[in-house]
Image (cartoon, rainbow, N blue to C red; front, top):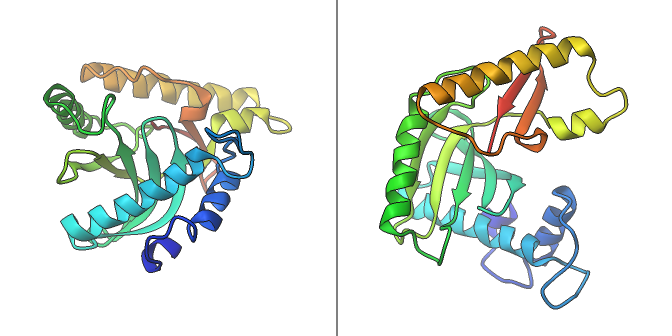
Length: 212
């Protein structure tokens, strides 16, 4: 709500950045050594403002940003309401590997990977809706199914963790999902508990989703 209504003001954005720092458990350190507010938290606020501007300018406010749900080295992930699909989606921002603008090779690679992901169908892989560059080729935005659950890393560290039965169930799902990607010549490269979302469905089934 703050991002949608407030004009850009780095100082006024500090409370929002602090909230993101706490929510995402970002270490409170900065390049200047301060422990009050991290550079990473302020970068998230910048990402969200940029994404809001892109959605409004290029897509006539098709997406209404709702909440930051993740952040990493490549960019920020935001939950958004999709006016066309009539459902919530996840918008993942991808930054250039080098510099501030995507080079031709990286641009072609991302487009090739996106086309391949559109062809992958598996219950443990979030549905891939769309992807696009901003007008200046500084950000690549991936539109995918919004998945609500807990990171497997957190589930495993919680009291009781997972019993043998669900572990066997989700392991089979994970192997099937990886096989589905390999069938389309896609290699994930970063399969690990923080990138696996564990969901307990209403019917009691144990579901695993691969993200990131």
